[in-house]
Picture (tube, helix red, strand yellow):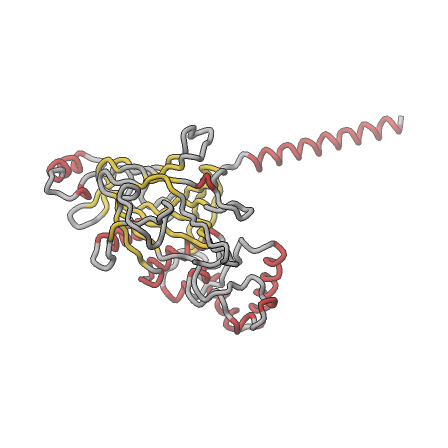
Length: 368
């Protein structure tokens, strides 16, 4: 009788354990959208007061070493401690971002409301104003995106200009948020911050994750304008480095920031508005003449297409409709270091209106 009672108790305990495992597995595998918090900078002083986050690209054991170094420095360095407390004082100035997985092969994430309406309008003012020179976009001879290359109107018919992080405080905040989103130290998005001999010493083995350059690992932000009929044929953002380059630098991540969305247009003052009422209809009927700029017409078309990304929702390639303030993050490099051929993407033809967007390209391990 005692043996039978003991067997019954063990069987009941095993069933309860299996039930807990099943419920835990169901909870963790059904989530397709996650959230994160990132700091929204209010002024230049606050932006310079945050301690740098740890790069997620570090190996796990090196991350632990870096954490210990940072904790020791925080405890012994009065300046670091003061900055650390200042960061917590401004913790209320954070925003929550929702990340939606569009594809896992290639890895594509969609982030609605990545940019605030004020930031969107500021970048539009730069793209349409005199401070940024908008010139015909270029591609490399291989057909991939290039910072400086030969003009190919048949492959890419947009116009674009470049702005650096130091242009103003708003642009700086956008770069900082992009670094937070990707889990990269935001200091690596500045020149001269990738290598600091005062902190890490002169020997490379004392800090194996130190980059062998004083240059930032991010390109200047590219502002783009696609008018009616303009498009960008399917292409890759990565460029194969020379075999003689020991560091094998390449663009590993791309961020697309949409400034105008479907139905958006710019009024006479250059302010973004949305075509959504009869008042807009009457104002646009007169502006649709041949003498009016295309910015006065609501945007139609211009989707971003990933033709090789096949999912249960998109059977002929993932399509992302432009939406003001939305960001799309995708990776051009696989976790094993090889280029991801599935990251090929295209800018669909604009049917009417004008599509404005911005690109941010991040390199690994250094910029070429």
